[in-house]
Image 1 (cartoon, each protein chain N blue to C red):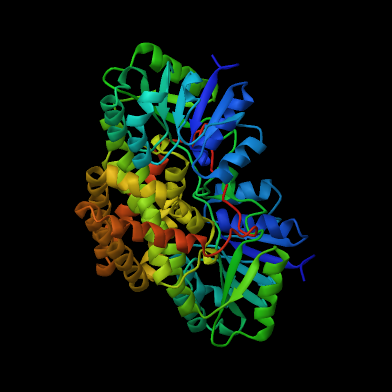
Image 2: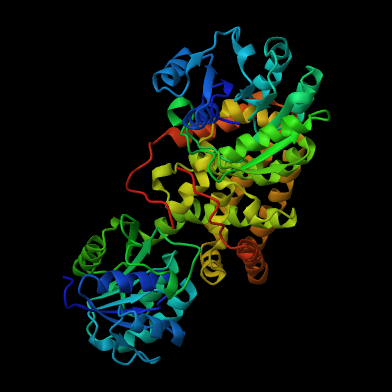
Length: 288
Length: 288
């Protein structure tokens, strides 16, 4: 489907910028917009975006696919007005990290049949066009969440687009996605933030850590503009995950305080057994 | 100092094996011992250890430097008998992750003047000779903890040895070392274990995680045989660090449950500000 397709990318940060670069590299004609004019100019200058859209998105009606690469809250806010201006686009897709409220907003906006929510499970603590790269989605896992009325054609188009970008696709319900992400993505991120804040209080700088400690605090560098809406949007599931982790920490800490060697050993071994459960997959890359 | 020096390495796992390989690559004559005969044979076969020591360590008296690469508890247990057999070695050094009880045991064993505790802040979740590599200490940070009676000559020898291995050396008191490591090393490790156990309960496999989640759970794969004695040896400081981190998690979780946007944002921003406090150092490598 790709060569000469016209695809609009709204938001040219890490995700949208990487999408624009990856599409451009495959012969797509990319229309781009970012409310930050310097990001948009950089994208045009680098040649990955061929045509700038104005802030009223005039011109977007010519795009066959529209990709929203914005924080969750901005995506939800844009969808109602988008419906009026996108013309005959066959597919509208967002890239945000939670899907439930976005899929619901797409349905409310009348975009249900041609909307597919997408969540690429990749990223970086770096943000903006400058952090984007054409290879960001190589071998990444991407979740696709259809609406109740998404057509088979729209879902197929979304799947073929991501496969073209070398990502592994998994289709699942938006609610199941958000519930799973509380454990698979949001909990790890928030533990990293908690570690960062704890080390700050203890006067430990990041450069004082070894490789393991640095890995454990990398996610804490993620953009609050992106993560605040994720946390708000998935609050109930995130609270459940945090409670479960806090419980394990407390139980373990009490075992350490009591000198309960058997309980300490059980905890450490349980972690290793889970870790050893599956060998490293060559598919999964480290981050830059 | 290095070429033709005779150095004995007791314990040929990740740390000791890497030490043997790095020393051998620099022309050292390496005498080695591991209670696991298959590890010792592999080390001899790979040529990094030139001479195997018997289990009574007969022959170790010819070594100028003795390196103990064992878990904390095994190191403490070995020191008393070691004093009787090491002859005129100018330096005895261990590589374990806590230093206070080991430095005390070295003093009690009468090894004080020629003992230096060493802790290289590097590692891997992989263990054993097979995981060792000559480059493990390249650019790593190494803490050196003298006893109350370590001679200037012994400390200088330890420093020059680590510099030869391309590690960055920091000399500090054993108690200060252990207090700092509770935050800089042990807390990150134990959070990783807690995350692993939490994900296990939630039925999430490690292969279901993205690059960030995988980084957050890598330390959980560390050997319990090494980590159990670390936790026991540094229990009080570890409890303090865990309490502080649990407090941040609880406060944050309550803010999420209450929908307190300002408090959620404050937490995320505090983490980013700490993260941004210092740019990445080229010196610090990722782990394999």
